[in-house]
Length: 196
Image (tube, rainbow, N blue to C red):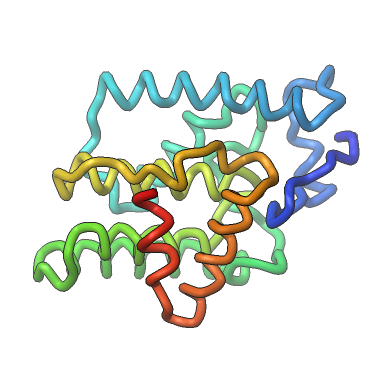
């Protein structure tokens, strides 16, 4: 059984059933979990630097990126959640909602519906809303968004408030507040946040 970690404000605790998927049973603190997850994410970033993927707007890539980011830590890395949460679509609609998001983003790009940053902001917000995985959704959605910007839209990555968003603090609170504003179709706080 996974220890009862102290989650940062705005973080969604891992479902007790999914907590059994922790591969590293020696982990006892949130700090240890964060360190191991970050080490795994560094491996994923190395893979991305070698492969430079451009076909990313599909379920297969979304899952593969999550798997690469967390497979050394979680058995269910790269698999959609199988429980409902207080955020996210019902778990049985994840695949459908994700497919709709990817199709919408491809259309926004093809039709130049919005400027590149706006496409990325809207993509990010909807991916967070879907909340496809048991854990790591924010980090995964930010990396997916940066890949969209860099590899498809030929723009620089977002700065995401220029701080580590996995920690509690003002930057994380501003990010959560900006996402909540976007829930009400006010994208301006998120637009400002991602380039600060």
